[in-house]
Length: 439
Image (cartoon, rainbow, N blue to C red):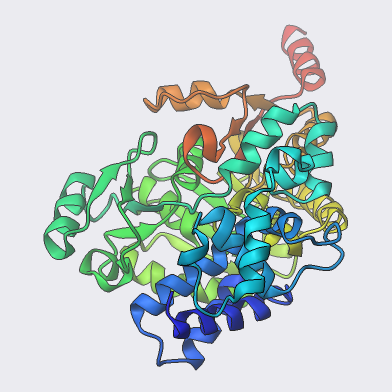
C-alpha cells in the first residue's frame, strides 16, 4: 500500500466509522472529491475500507476495544486488519507504522480468536446473535452464517430475456473486454462475473441486455411465476431491479405496476426501464401502503411481490457497515411496517393469485414471524412450498423447509428470505357455498 493509498484509506475510514451515512456513499463521495486517486488507488482503498468494516467486531476485540461502546483508533483497527486479516508480517506493514505499532502487531498475532466471544468470532452484532439463538439456531450455525458474510460478494448479472440469450451475452462480454463469466447454478438468466469489471461501460449493459442483480434476487422472479398477459404488482419497487425481471418474464405483455413511496427511487428506475425495452411497466408513486391507488386494484392482481423494507442484514457482504448502523430497536420498528405493508398488499391479490413476501434479511422476526402472523389473521391465504415451485421451474436447490432461505455459505448468494402464498376460498365460506349448491 502506497502512502497515498494509506492516507486515503485512513480518511475514508474516519468518515465511515462515524456511521452517519452508508459506507458506499462515503467512499463514493471521497473519490469524487479526490480526483487525483487513480483506478488502482481507488480499488485498494475501497477493498481495504470494506474489509475493515466486514471484520470490525473482530478488529475491535483484537485492538482492545471496550465491548463496542467506543472503537479503537482507526490506525489501530487498520493495524489489526493488516496483521490478522491480510496476514502481513511485521516487515510488510506500511512504513507509516513504527516500532511501537509493530510491537502491538506482534501481540495481536499471538491472540487466538477461538478465545473470543461468539459475536466476535461470527463478526455479528450481539443483538443479532441473540435473535438467531432465540430462534433455535445453534452456535455453530450462527458462526457459519457470520463467517460466510466476511467475503466480498461476487458480481452477478441477469440477462434480459426479451433482448438476448445468456450464452450470447457471455460470448459478447468475453469478446468486448475479456470478461470471464459462468452461468449461475440456480437462476436461468444469471451470469457470475470473474472479478469486478466496470460492467456499466460495456454495450451489453448500456443497451439493456444485462442488469446487475444478485442470483438470490433473480430467484424471487421464479417464485412469483409472472406470465404473459397477467396483472402484476411490485409493491415496494425501489429502483426496479425485480420489476424489470418480472416485466421480462411477462414478455413485455400484460400490465406491471411498480409501486413505491419514494419519488427518488422511482426516478432511478426510469433509465433502467428505458434500457430494458419494456413498455408494460407503470411506475406509481404512492403516499403509503394504504394509498387510494392500492384500494382501486383490490382483488385484481395475478401476482403481488412484496420485497419489504428490511434491516438488510442479509447483504452484509456488500453493506458491512450495517453491523453498526442497524439496531434491535430499528428492526422492531421495521417489523410493524412489514406487517402493515403485507396486509395492504394482500388486498390486491385475486382469487387463485399469488402473494410473495421477501426480505434480504436472515432475522426470523422479519421473515417467518411476519408470515406466520399474516397467515394466522388471513384465512383466505395459504402457504405454498417454494421447493415445489422451483422444482417445476427446473431449479434444483436445497432448502430447509417450504420457505426460500438462501445463505452465502450454502448458496453463494446474499441471505434472502421469501414466502409464497396464494389466495384461496376460506373453509367456512366454501362450506356455506357447498350447502347453498346442495339446496
